[in-house]
Length: 465
Picture 1 (cartoon, rainbow, N blue to C red):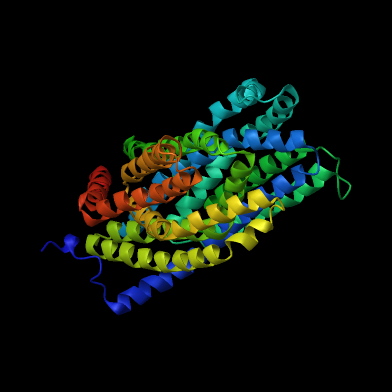
Picture 2: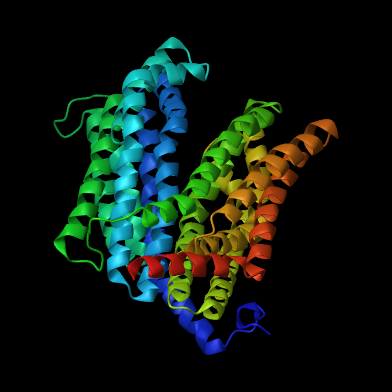
C-alpha cells in the first residue's frame, strides 16, 4: 500500500499525544486572538446602541461591505500560511521570506481599490440595500473610514497568517491583542466622548477601527523588519511566488465572498416566518460564533500550519496522520461544546431578549447549531489541512455546495415547498455543515492534495536552482 494512503485511524498513540500537545501550544494563542476580535465587534455594537436605532442599522449594513477586506485578507492569508508553513518545513528561509513579502505587497495593492470605492461610493452602497436616507448617510460615513484602512487591514491579517505558518502563533496574538485593545478603548472614548475625547458617535467607532487596524499592520511589518522573528522581508524576484499565492488565495477569496452573499437570501427566507424568527436566528448565530469560533478557527489554523510543515519536509503520510489527530481533537472539543449549547439553549437565549416568542425560536436555533457541532468539528480542521497543502478549491466547492444547495436550497424546499416551516430551515442548517464535512473529508482520504503540495514545492525548488 502507498504510504500516503494509510488508514486515518492507524495512529501511534505517542505521535497522537505529540500532535495534541503541539495543537494546544499553537492553538490557544489563536483562540485568544479570535476571542478578542469577537469582543471588539461586540463592543462596537454595544457602543453604537447608545446612539440611536439609526446608528445601529447603519453600522449593521456597513458591516456587510466591511467584511470584503476581511475576506480578501483571509484568502491571501491562506496563501501566505500555505507557502510559509511548507517552506518552513522544507528549511528554505529565503523562499519563505520572499513569499511572505510578496503576499504583503499583493495585500496592500488589493486594498487600494477599496479605498477609492469608499471615498466615492460608500453612501450609495448603503442605499442600495434599501436603507433610508439618514441610515445611508451615517453608514456611508462609517464605511468610508473603514475602507480607508482596507490596505492596512489586509496587510495585518496576511502578516499574522505568515507568522503562524512558521509556528509562531504568540507574536500575532500579542500584536492583534494590543491593536484590538486599542480599538476597543478608542471606540468607547471617541464614540461616547469619554476621558476627555470628543463625542463622535458612529464616526468615532469607525476611526477606532481604522486606527486599530493601522497599528496592527505597522506592528506586523515592524516585527518583520526588526529581525525578532523567523521571517524577514526580502524583495521578491520573478513571478512564480505571486502566481502560486494567487492560485491558492483566489478560490478562498471567492469562496468567502460567495458565503457572505448567501447570507442575504437566507435572511430573507427566515424573515418569511416573522421578525421574531429572524431576530432569534441572529441571536443564536451570535451565541454560536462567540462560544465556538475561537476554537474551530484555532483548529483550522493549527491544521494548516502543522500539515503544511509536514508536507514541506516531504512527509505526506505524517501530514495525513496529523490532520486526523487534529480532527479528532477538534471533534471532541466542539462536540462537548455542542452538548453544553444544547442543554443551555434556552438560558443563553434569555441573555439577549425577554420576548417569549423570540426566546422560543432562539432556543431551537441554538439546538440546531449544537447538533451541527460534530460536522463543524470535522470540517474546519480538514479544510485547514487542505489549505496547508495549497488546496483551497475543495473548501471552496464545499462552501458553495453547503451554502447554496443545502442552506438555501434544502431550507427553501423543506420549509416552504414542502411546508415544514422553520423545522425545514433547521434541517437545512445541519445539512449545510454535513455537506461541507463530507466533501473535505472525502478529499482528505485521497492523494490529490498531497500531490498538489508536492507540485507547488517542486516548482519553487526548480526556481531556486
